[in-house]
Structures are given as structure tokens and as C-alpha cells.
Image (cartoon, rainbow, N blue to C red; front, top):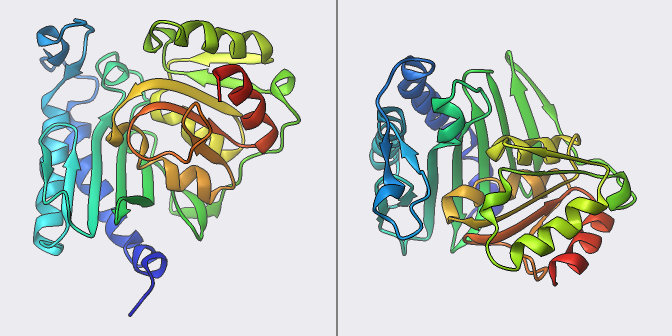
Length: 268
């Protein structure tokens, strides 16, 4: 019987099939005048939370592939929820992470595809079909593919926050005293960049950004990213320093020294 790691590794070709299907569903709608529905209008905080036909079509395409190939597997997706969520293997899908960027014509959104084994994120991919990049990883390592070429990726060494580049999608993610704790880290770093959604995490894995701090995430926002960063030698925890599964508060770092310094300020 193969180990969970080797079983997950054997599914990398299928990960690419899912990314192909999602990209085919999404790209005809990118930089077009498509209509946008605000899912946030019905929530108590009223934060603008856009969804489009591209999001829904991409998740549908991936779900159909999974159901045909692995009917015993579960699925958790942003647009259509969970099915067979107690299965040994569960696919975690965010068809367009960064829909705000997508509807603004910016190419820094991505398709997130993850695979849990017994609740643990085991395999993951960040795919950007417009740019043509795919970042994926597992316990065996992490890689980027572009223009038919594949190469390994690694996080970079960074001696501490004073030398670090930090990213978050937007400071409005933080509520209450989270804002003060985040700002303490931001004041300590060399450079801060906003607005990159999942692409910032891919840059941590690739060795160009040192730290990403976010809050209020859902499982499908982060779980597909975890194997990529860990496979590249990095770390993904909550703000208390615990290994990350599920959503909520997230800290990703490429170097243990940056992780520890950020955790001290975030309250870990």
C-alpha cells in the first residue's frame, strides 16, 4: 500500500488536469465586461465580495473531473460548498483566489487546488493561467512550471524583519487589535506590498517575498498554498505559531528567523 505522500505525488498530473480545466473556463471571461455579483451584500459586515460566472464555471469544471476520476474523494469549494467532507482524501478548491483583482483586469489572481489526506494539507497548487505559471508542492518539494519548463523553488534566507519584504492583500483584513499587531510587524520590515492575494504566497515559496500576514481566511484560501510553501522550505502557521490547517489568522514565512520575530509581535 503506497504511503500518503507517494499517493499524493502520483496525483500531480491530475493536479495539472484540474488547472487546465479551470483555466479553460476562466480565460474567456478575463478582461471582458462580465457581470459581477456581490456575495458580501447579504452579510453583516457588508464587505464587497465579488463572484462571477468565471468563478462558478471553473469550480464546476474541476468538480466534474474529480467526480469522474475519484468519486470516493470529497470536495470543499468556495462556490458550491462541501460534499463527502469526511472522506480520506478531500480536494480543496478556490477557482479564482483574488476575484477583486480579476474583475479589475489585474493578472495576480490564481486558481488554488489543494488535497487533504485525513484532514492534513498534503498537495497543493497555485496556478495563474493568464501568465502561464504553476507553483505546486508537497512534502517532496516545490516547483514552478512555465512555458513547458519545470524547476524547483526554495524560500530565501532572511536574517530578520529589518531585511524582510512583507505582503498582505489589504490591511482591512484585520479587525480589532489585529490591526495594531499587524502594524507593529509592518513598521519593522524593509518593504511592504499590498494586493497580491495568493500570488504573494507563491513569491514566498519562490524566494522573493519573506512574509505574508493575513486574517479572516477560509480553508480554500490557504490550504492549497500550505504544501507549496512547506515544500519550498518555508513555514505556515497561525498567529500563535501552531501549524496551519483551516482558515482564520495566517502567517507564512520563508525563514524561521522571520517567522519567530513576526510571531513575537503578533502575540504568539
